[in-house]
Amino acid sequence: MQSLPDDGRWGNLMLNKVLAFCEEHGLLAHGSSIVVAVSGGADSMALLDLLLHLQERRALSLHVAHFEHGIRGEASREDADYVAAFCRARGVACSVEAADVPQYAKERRMSLETAARELRYAFLRRVRACVGAQAIAVAHHADDQAETVLQHILRGAGLHGLVGMTPRTGDVVRPLLACTKEELVAHCAAHGIEVRHDATNDAAEARRNYLRLEILPRLTAHINASAGAALVRLAEAARADDALLDEMAHAAFSRVVCGEGRAAGAAHESLALSRTAFRAEPLALQRRIVRLAARAFVDESHDWGWRQVEQVRRMMVEGRGGLSWDLPGCVRFFLDGKRGVFLVGAIRTAHEEGGAGGRPLSSHRTAGGMAESDLLSGIPLRAPGATRLPALGIALVADFVRERPRTDGRSEIYLPSRVLAAAVVRTRRAGDRVRLPCGTKKLKDFFIDEHVPRTARDRVPLVVCDGEVVWAVGVRRFSSALVKEDESMVRLRAVFEEGAYDHAQRFGEDSFR
Image 1 (cartoon, rainbow, N blue to C red):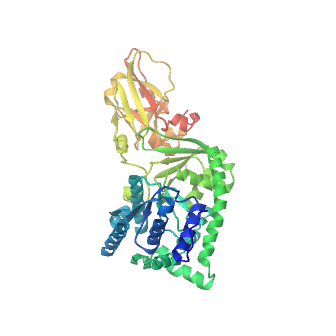
Image 2: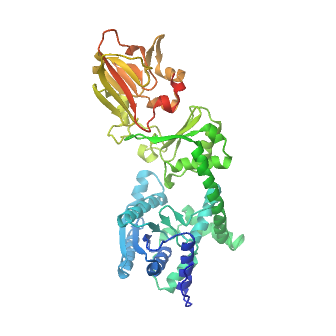
Image 3: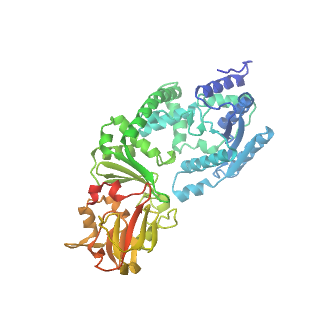
């Protein structure tokens, strides 16, 4: 390990400690470009100063990023000015951005803390992309780690939650995770570094602040004088065990996944898990498999908690077909026979809907410019030509033909040319009926009889002529669609784009017979 000469100054002790931690965990590679998140407080100012001292030795390229949250008025703007001036004096590039976090939080019905974090990290990643940096360095330290682990324990975390913050999370690195707050404050004082104070950190009403200002000091005073250090050791011990289980879970995940994809231009992504294979895995791996499924769709800001993970796990093991549940990150989970299916984009978040929870989409506009509400009112069929349904990942292709080969009526039907002028494609409505050889039946009852999963019924395209349903795409044609002898006709084919929900295949051929 590279070591700095120790001439007795406090700075070299800290430099050696930070350098050793970074080398142990592969942080701050030689010659790398780093975006340094700096608020102006003691933690981030110590981080910046330490990285400036390491800059020449590690051949680092540093770029400071300061995000002004718009929460503390003039004091917040003064923080931004101070950081910018500090960087100018030391010849360090600096990017500053301001935002109205309170307004953003209000519009999206989220906490100030969540809104601030979401906007701040979005800014940091824009800066990283702009300057071509390899990582974003943040000033989380050992005291932050202790608070995080304690918070996770009180929320009822599993082993993964006990890990707390890791030295590296994606593009974010934490060089100070082995340093205490006291050490960082002392470093700034020893080097004459002015630090800014954020008064919002003194408000015990905030949950995180309450842990830091009230709970941890009481634990330290009455239970364990080294309570913070004990929580940090717990995180370090959990990290190795968690890494092993995570490796095993990835292998198990590959055994359980039985279908995934995305339609070109479609609004939905999907992931299907085999319930039989899932049940064969140990309980600990079952929960991790669910979390891996979550990572396929949502970022950590929409991470699923214990309740969501356990509910999905129990549904996979014990649930009956047709059950569904809406999850954070616009993900819907439903059971279909021997499979559990995750569908992202099927619901909207509370701030998009203006309500408190996710609900089925009603007017989502897809990448192709078509709103899902159009599918409720009806889209005219093009003939000849293709009628694309990007919201469903399906295209209906119509062409005039002279001969009519035998077809099963699921992916291809033949219509009389005379009905095309009034033909539309839409999704089901209340009161829809279909004509069968034995008479008419409610479409809802037909779907039940055919074992069409409840969660799939609103996604089955219907071809309707003069108000009468003639084809449930992917399911069957109906008697009203029969072509009379010597009558001109049109062939209508369903083209399921890669990753789309081809009902006959994705939900099993037997489900649609």
